Image (cartoon, rainbow, N blue to C red; front, side):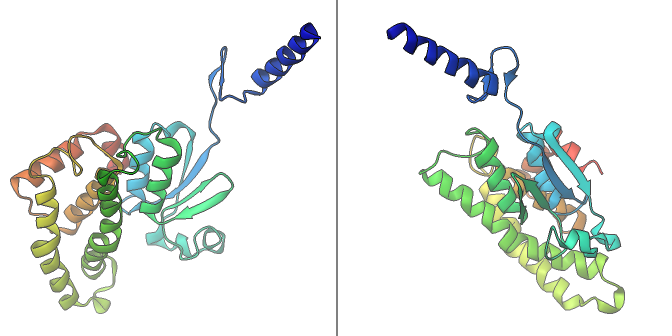
Length: 239
């Protein structure tokens, strides 16, 4: 009976090995993840997702589908079926679609990061990580978006200069000082380690430069320089 049981166990293990159930095969190496699809337009918030995909080593299994939202492609019915507002980014993965750049970044790190680019769960640092991941899209992005829309994107007849003035004041008096203070004593936004929060903050700073409002203090200038030399940042923003 023991020999029969051993044969059953051995046969089961061979089948499991052939099916790659444990995620790795001794001859084939790590299991390939299913492909993802990122709907992307350079110089938009989807660039931060593309950057993070590179930092996580997921570029090879990610299809980049460009959607020229500036030319109206986001309003096409086939894309509206992907993103209900016709914006970028949108990410297809695991049979579903995610929108909102910070939500996508949080998902990618949790699903594929294997503990990288994020502080340990249950720590105060993890709470600060969430804070920055929310602060940028809730506070920083709308400020910069107002400036960009009313100086670049909208026809001149639709631009409202007073909104630009208010947004520039908010950037100069509240947002930029906070960002500068956060990196005054440490190389990265959460301390000594680069995290996905730096991707989100760094991408906002790249947008601030496009908006023409970036006037960095020495600590913030040094932070921007550290961001700028990262190869995956350069690939995401080279367009």
